[in-house]
Image 1 (cartoon, each protein chain N blue to C red):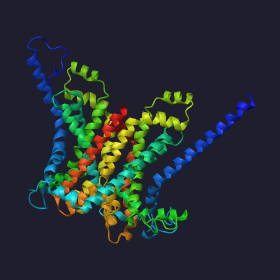
Image 2 (image 1 turned 45 degrees about the horizontal axis):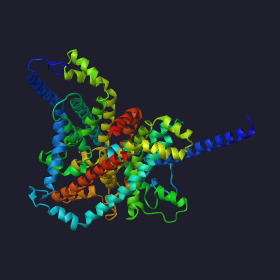
Image 3 (image 1 turned 120 degrees about the vertical axis):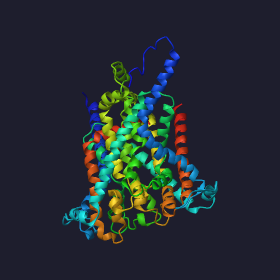
Image 4 (image 1 turned 180 degrees about the vertical axis):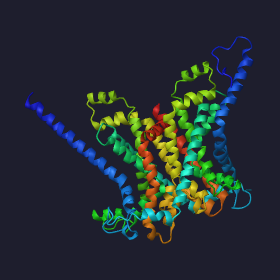
Length: 310
Length: 288
């Protein structure tokens, strides 16, 4: 490769031709760096995403080719399919409870830990640990901890005087709260780390100035910490919302959507429809809806954040 | 100093001490909530099957049944599962680190038309859930005959946008002057990547490697979808076998033992490289 890729001052003669050759050169070089990743990325992510939209407008069984049926899948989805409605509702339920709960828990932990104290490092490790361990292992363990009769959780509840502790994963009312508890348990350490990183960027002088002005701990939290953390909070909210809307493996391992359909979420409905029932066209239509929900949520949050910054 | 000023100071000190006590109480409660499931998992892996559920709860097994850790190798496909998981995690990590850092160099240091649009495309897909495009992807893999082979998982994981994103964030912190003077010294772009950027980005590579290894090790949905023959399973799919077993209750001990075996390597890696995990998350998280 030549070494004249970027020259400080091009020679005065015939600069235009020289420049376009340089540009061509750079394009080639740029692509040579990107290609090894891009080819795999395009083939396995980009192309499937594009194909998805076409498949959602077809009928496609386990065998044979997709057959064009227009918006039929979407009509069925929004007007006749009760399972989809249940799944959408359950997903919203999970999101609406899990998102604020995790946000508050992780921010609270981060604020508590953001000081010089003994044991902080140990605690950070402990909090982050659930997030990096296998979801199958922890979901199975929690499942057994939740067992209604002999599980440790209900034994502890009985010890504290709860006579009729909930049936958790075998009760259609309590299965979702059980899943949410595990979801929050698993993720709060991760978001705590993000908040801790955010807290460390807040200048100490701001707190000192607030203290001089007579602000108490609570008022310092609301008037210094919360506004300064806005970028982090924004990012965490986006991640949490999208993560909640696409929740799947946790539900898959803990309850498989049951009992009944009480924890059936959108992702699981897609999976069932496609790989258990071989109805790939219809499943793709549900995928498009999931995709659209995630996209819209992200855009709304970007928009809200931009307005708040003004 | 008068008595009047001494009293509020003593009161303040007392309040500080109480505050500290409350703080530690909160943190200890939270730590218990976070760690008890792991403790229960470990203790149950050393119990007889019929000792897992007892009233009252036994946190420490009556007799330690170490044989669970011997039996699991003969009574299940654990050795195959561990081997497969290891192969996948290592290959995926290597591919992701190599192609990701290479592409990141192109995105951060070479100016060419269409570059920024292309990068935006990369970033946009991070927000798209895998569940949304798993169907077309599955059909493509099926038509290539890759279902039920480890290749499917390698392809699935190795070319994600995450590695490109993380490495680009890091390269952006390395001053351009360095590459500039290397160019004047006659180094090609490939030379700059290999001799300057790679050595300087060792911490970022460590972060990316650890995160990728752990993600691939823990991945459940991909392997669950693609791997069908028990000898092709990864440890996560294998664990589910214990749970799905019709005579489930007789397998409790092995189930917990399997869980410990799937968590242990990750725990060790995490303890050893904690700093890199945190940094990796901070660089990708905070600038997103």
